[in-house]
Amino acid sequence: MARNSLQEVANEKCELEMTPMIDVTFLLLIFFMCTLKFKILEGKLGAYLPKDVGVQAFDTPPVEKVDIRLDVIRPGNKVRYDYKTKSNVPYTEAHAQAGLRFFYDSTRRVRYTVGGKKTEDLDEVVRRLKKFKEGDPEIKATVDARTDVTQKDVVIILDAAIDAGYSDITFKGSYED
Image 1 (cartoon, rainbow, N blue to C red):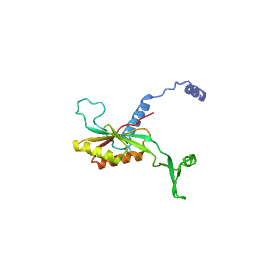
Image 2: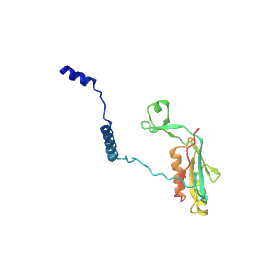
Image 3: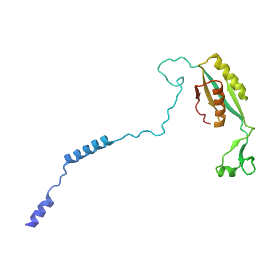
Image 4: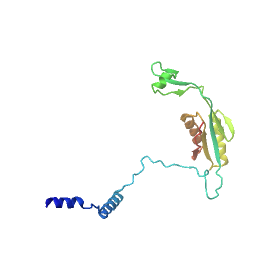
């Protein structure tokens, strides 16, 4: 008799009920949707994008601006300050492998182009920028730093523009070789 009942159980067709599985799946889906918290972006920087470039659906009057272009005409020599000898020494491959920093010596030359006129004199740059500012007090400046221009070069020209009275200064994009 026991044998017959085991044989009946073995011969029974096994079927899975799908309704409870679907219910559980929907409950899990609802649970995860309700407990989801969106991550707040860390380190988000508000970017100021110029309004006079790009695709726009309406006509805007062109914005008057002064272009300040920086070109390196003589890169100069890489040196580093040696604290033992208290003097500048040439920057070598050993320094580079050690991860030591360098700067350029006084032979470095940067040419500034302001409003189409070229100069290497920062005082002349400030005079030209002030002249543009006198003609239009609302004029803006755009810094166009070309290849091999360092951050120091850009900061120098920013200081010159601020000295000339500019408060709205934008930057052009990078140039890939």
